[in-house]
Length: 155
Image (cartoon, rainbow, N blue to C red; front, side, top):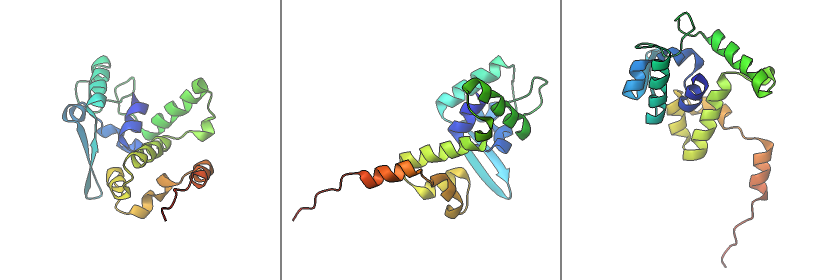
């Protein structure tokens, strides 16, 4: 559920603690950092899943994602959990980082809306330049664009 939440919301690993039962009920998490408020929107489908997960784990309020002892998950714990899943998925742990999920979100979001300004806003970046890394495409995609048939010009 944690991986799905990070991938579906663009939440930073350090912000996971703001995904609370209350946020799931309201459809958004508000994060106040560095004098700014960042709003993370949660889809209704994700909210239903989060509330079901919270009920299953007997979390009535506050942070949804917790350790077995009830403490909020730390960045280190989230990273360790993700690395632990690599064995089961037959993926090299050296290739997996929690921030990859944020890149995935950004890539999918940009592919869907093609609006770099909106993407910067959703990711909580004040500079469009800082999101360039999310938009870097592979050589394969560049080749596909080059190989596209050219439109015929009407004379």
